[in-house]
Length: 326
Image (cartoon, rainbow, N blue to C red):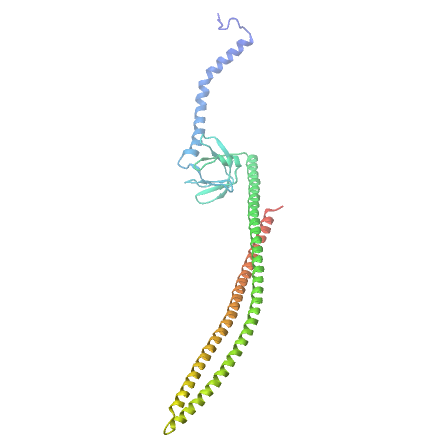
């Protein structure tokens, strides 16, 4: 006789379900035994990629390009068609990427999404992942779009900076032009002053020179009178009994003439000094004009340099606009 362990569930659906559960429960040890090696091998492969001797990790980040550099260590054979993922501190994947630039000891990724890039730090672990052909192509397409966007933003920043430089150069050129106008006015003023001073000086020099000439004539007359007195004194001295009183009178007259001649010489020297001062003043004004003209030439050179620099900036702006594309 057969004894059923489900006496009240003969030929019922509940009995069938319980029997199946009981049978599956008996298979659990077998399934566990079969699955453990596969799980262990999968975990071991992932662990080798993260913590093994050939561990890949981020060693540099580039804020401008939002890219990361992965140190290769002893890993070789990296190609651009491989896919990788960077992990956070908990081991979760942050973002997938591929090698964009492969160097001897590292490779650089393309630009990550801004939010993903903020989660990446130096030393973060990197593992290799396998994507479907469709996902790999989509990943590269998205990286190309981000790279183009970043390039356009970078070019826009450069253009904006160059525009600021252009505006600054224009302002500096205008300042130079204002200075040039000021110097031109100063030169005109100095030239007008020089003409006035030269005209006045020439009149004064002519007047002083006329007075000098008159003094020279007066001195010449006095010198002739002195010579006459000397001759007369010599005549008196040749006499056997020279008249001393007349000789003394002639000596006094000669002394008076010498004093007059001396005063005339002093006056002539004073007038000559005045003439030299007038001419030196004119020379000083001419020197001031030359100094201002030198400043003007320096400003001309500076203006040309600034205009050359401005032309170069405008060309660079045009070049960046063309490279940015439509």
